[in-house]
Length: 167
Image 1 (cartoon, one colour):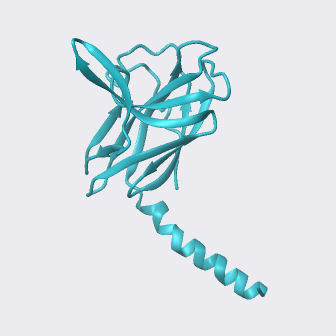
Image 2 (cartoon, rainbow, N blue to C red; image 1 turned 90 degrees about the vertical axis):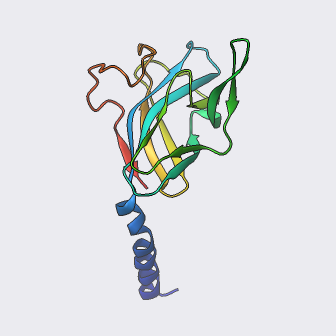
């Protein structure tokens, strides 16, 4: 392949992918991850997903480099006050102009088979995969001090967990 055709191919590839950067209407806020102990083999991540677009989207997968398996999970009541955690294979819908909260005791990102220990202040690099918006990279801080009222109380962490890039 000549240099000219290689350059044209590169420009064409950039032109084809550029609209995805500009059109993403997904915003991630207030992300944090937790583990139960330093030796834990699994952890969970929580965040707010805001859809600023005119059509619904769906979070369908998550990838990290800190766990062997990353899944979308929820808690479901099985009766008699028994709650069971289970994978949500169809993902989580984020309505147009709305949001979806991934929070403790509800929908969340499950990090199973941790390949490294996670300590307070560490960061988890994750890729959130959406049906419409595609892949969005987000940095999720490990916060072992956060109380269970995720997202409902101002914890004074302005901008905390808002580091994300649109892909």
